[in-house]
Image (cartoon, rainbow, N blue to C red; front, side, top):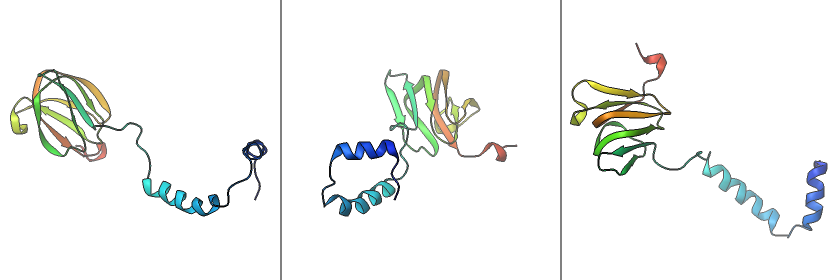
Length: 125
């Protein structure tokens, strides 16, 4: 096995490897693979500032969701789907606004419910 010259100096400075370390290597590799890819930022996928001046967050929202506290002002859609905002509860009536995946914006003056759809741009008419 070849070791890069820059790494070789680092390994020499660290000293000898304890005998237990080679036995732990497969366990550590398995743990790293099982963990899967890390997300850049942990937290809710969808966040908004409510009329109650509290920050509300939803993780993995699906379908129609009521905006607890009444949605208003700042909204961040970090989901993979489009968020369609409605002024009426139960996603009734005409859409008030639409926020694409990964976008942020302001929904004024308020919204009462949000429908999350996971339709790709290629599937849209």
